[in-house]
Length: 286
Image (tube, rainbow, N blue to C red; front, top):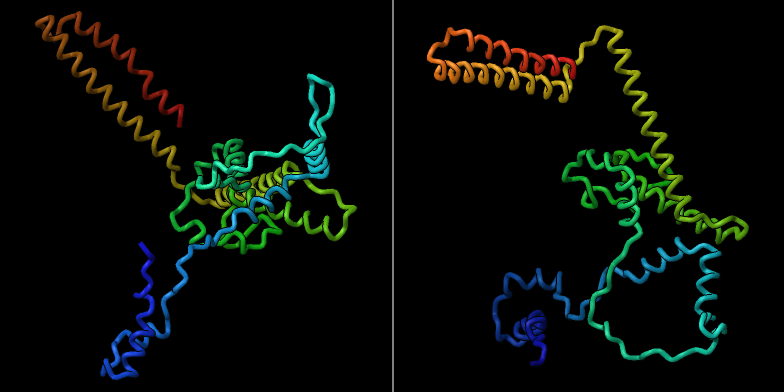
């Protein structure tokens, strides 16, 4: 069936009817559609050029030694059985079998994120709010000449973007001055990671010093969430101890038939020895 495009010509058709007098009054939508005409080219063009991004990533990863090794392996192939190098170009299969399969997208940013959070699993405990992301902050528009950003907190994404900036900046410098050594991905990542460590340690030291100064001046801080959790846990354990002792006394009374007997007293004293360590352990943990 042929693709129908008559509906896209509604503006031209209505204009022809108005001029010929077939339609007397102008429709309410006529001015709006005239200002924003429908798009007639129905061919879908991808807005994201992955091939360009892939070539840019390869240019970051390929050092001089790696690029030379790739060229040599493409030109010559060594056959271990015969002991000779294969220099003749063989014609490959011209039939493309994966024409209709989608391209597997691989991004350098994802690999850097996985590496960083694999090495620093506790950074995943740093909470994030839903508005943090590309909808609010466009990381590519920020100036990553410094890892510190005014409208973004320091986290693993800062290390990723700083690494990419170091690679891009080094690529520009190499083009201007070929004598400059091309930096590898490992060196760029380590440089961004060490900058992250330095800022983290400096901020933690500032917080600790400020807390000590405030305490020296007479400030009183509320218990932390961990301390509150320990306190609630000790209360629950104390209540559980009381209930367990009461239930044990009841069971022993039913068995012996005499709640004031010597056996019940001995069992109660033994249970006291068992449960006495629980509150003390909670107080020591505080």
